[in-house]
Image (cartoon, rainbow, N blue to C red; front, side, top):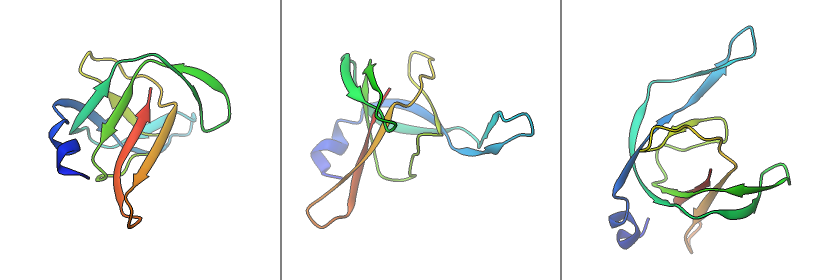
Length: 104
């Protein structure tokens, strides 16, 4: 990630990585991990990974490690855990993973 962008990660979110589903089909998650983030609180119409049009309330920027998937759970500074609508891995000019952009 570009150093200038990394310097803008001034908020902290909590990530819980999806582990599996229990016998009832409910997700189980790993231990919570605090991560630096940049959150842009701006409603925006997006297309989800399933092709559905939704309105995102925020876009989150995260460092590339640890990775994140749509099945993970994020807790924002306000205590909410919104559904992840889209996770986009951003790569630099050498195809190295630079950061993630997540719409919630």
